[in-house]
Amino acid sequence: MRHMATYDLMESVRNTNQWLGATALAFASYPITGLVPHPMFQWMAAWGEVTERTFARMVAKPDWGIHSVSCPDGRDHLVQVDVKLSRPFGDLIHFNVLGRPEKERKVLLVAPMSGHYATLLCSTVNSLLPDCEVYITDWHNARDIPVSAGKFDIEDYTLYLVDFMKELGSDLHVIAVCQPAPLTLAATAYLAAEDPSAQPKTLTLIGGPIDPNAAATDVTDFGHRVTMGVLEEMAIQRVGFKYAGVGRMVYPGLLQLASFMSMNADKHSKAFFDQIQRVARGEAGDHDKHNRFYDEYLAVMDMPAEFYLSTVERIFKNGEIAANEFVVDGVKVDIGAITDVAVKTVEGAKDDITAPGQCIAALGLLTGLPESKKASHVEPGAGHYGIFAGRSWRDNIRPMVLEFIDNNSGRTPPAAKGKGEAKLKAV
Image (cartoon, rainbow, N blue to C red; front, side, top):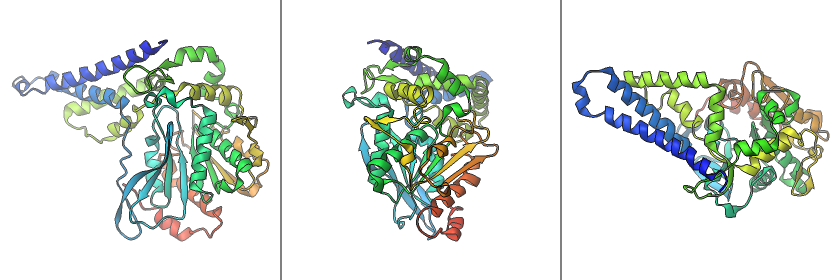
């Protein structure tokens, strides 16, 4: 029962605030309040609306919201989200564009398991759909996974990626975004030794901590400063009675969210105050800029405790990937075994989470790969989010990644075709 009461207390606080917001909105929205033309009621209703929505979306998984995509035939084709492979801790899903001939580029997006759902990459998926067959790793919320499903640490994560790559075949291009980059590199190396025919054709690593010590950030400093005992005591709790994963040890999403928000408390406070003002003036919308961002940002998921702790200890503290000493299921993974997979790293010049230098370190570990199959790029002025979902991604990085894929696909790059397709947008 240790820490279960704390987990339920956090959920109770969240639930209470959601209820307070709903109550304030309902009370201030009674027609009788129209007899008293006082701005207090408008402010109360606005505060209630913003507060209720804020605390409600913390426990709701966002929808992908990808309904159709425009194709060269001039038609909008419906998009169906299909589960290609299902596992207890995560699924491999396919964005199936109905009625469209299968695209030659088959892309697997490896989403982070770092507190947010895979829907964090929704805009990334949107941007790739016109040109590619897109698959993505859809990790499950640990609070919904029964204890009987067993553990899930970074070795299990790596083996999941191995299974997903095998399922999709060798004519595959993998793009790992942020946190999973080192484990995706390890999974590729594992395949290189165990099943070379299942290796992907290209691997693009975007803003991942391959060698966290290559460039210090607040994240790496924290990883070195805190001891594992203190970290476990501070961060790990047992899932409460409300969810199917009752009793499972997790790093709670609500606790992670509190850490995220505290890093930029002033900025978030101002954003919510401004939104309340907009609602009170009748200027806000259900899908305005504020709601689009916070619907995703506030939707957090619990991570399995063993995954979080092993990530900190083995990736950040011990630097097992950076030292090429990573072991998966008793098998030593040699990154130098990768000899055929073209690898590209992408970093943001202003990334304060995974600073420039941490990701490009992967190329130095690829001792068996010819220089002609290695590439790197540092995007000027881009932060962590911008390199996979912002303007930098759309305008510069995405076309560059598609060109890299085409140049290493074993076929003639469809240059003219690619330029035309890049203008199409999924909706």
